Image (cartoon, rainbow, N blue to C red):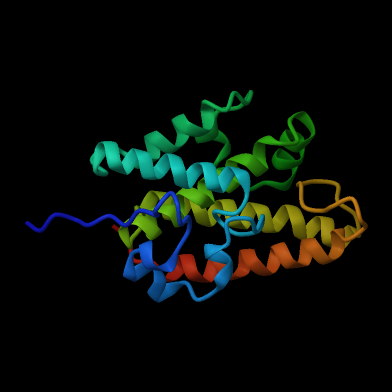
Amino acid sequence: MKEQRFYFDDEAEGLAIQTSHPDFTAVVKEEFYFDCVDDFSPFGNDDGADALLSLTEWYQETKGRDKIINWLFQTIDEYGFAYQSKWASGLTGAEEIRKLEEEDPSFIGCMDRTIIGVGFGQCKITGSINAELKQLVKTAIVRQKMIHEKDLAEGEQTQGDVGDDFGNDEKLLQEYLDRLAIMEGDLAAFKEA
């Protein structure tokens, strides 16, 4: 049996097409995937960047032999939120999400960005995605779209954490929603491991 090759970024160079699995680059065509400061990319926000770095270390240590889902939930839970990510990752009801956002405004966004970063990170490193992880990423994208579509429709940000101090919330919300739609389409194209 042929040993799987993993693709890791060079620490000095950072995110790069050249250090990504060919099956990943065959699917993703947008430059934002390789922009380490684009908050709306899987790896440009703090949570996604940390997730990719941690995932890289996990693959280097385990060669992918451990269960990635267990590792993912443990990683998120180590952030110290009041809720368990395994439970919360399946939530899609507007009222449940609104309640969690009120109780801890950072939890859902952080969890979703981490899940998205790990999912796309696995594709970037291995060229494929665990079936259960793919579903978690899909749910995280749907949840983020739901939260931010509501904010956009209401003309103000009442949930989520997209926006700035310069009155550009509507423009930024739309940009984020557009990126989520691209990621959702690209996610569907990745083969499952």
